[in-house]
Length: 154
Image (cartoon, rainbow, N blue to C red; front, side, top):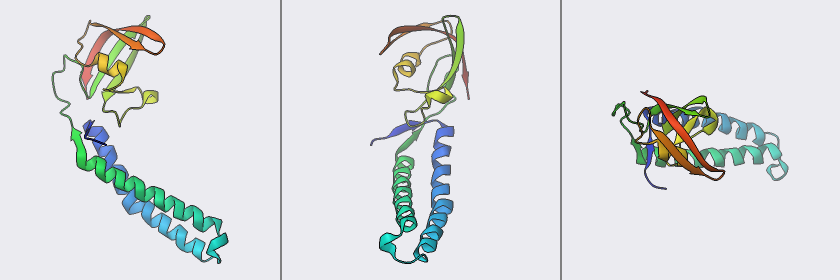
C-alpha cells in the first residue's frame, strides 16, 4: 500500500472506525471469547472458534486502519470551486438525465452512494473540468459523454 488521498469526511470515517474497533468491538469480542470458554472443551467449541476468528479479523483491520491513518493525505477541499477536484460535488448530464457525484479518494469510493474515485475512469475524466465542459470517458461498455452542469465544494 502507498499513500492514499482522503477528503476530510473520509479521513474522519477512518478515525471513527479505528476508535470503534479498538474501544467497543475489542471488548465485545473478548467477552464473547470468555463466554465461549465457559462452555467447556475448546477443541469442539464452535462459539470459541468463531469468536477467535472475529478477533483475528478485527485485529487485522485495526492494523490496516493504523497504516491508512498514518499514511493518509487529507486534501484541502477548499480549492478552486470552479474546477472539479477531490471533494467536489459535480452534477453531470447524460442523455437528458442529471446525476450528482462526489469525487473522493480511492478508499472512499462507493458507486452506490455516488462517490466516485479520483482514480476511476469517470472520476479521472471529470477532474479539472469546469461547468459547461463536455467530458468523454472510455469505459468497458464503450465511450460515454457527460456535460458538467454544476460544481460545488463540501
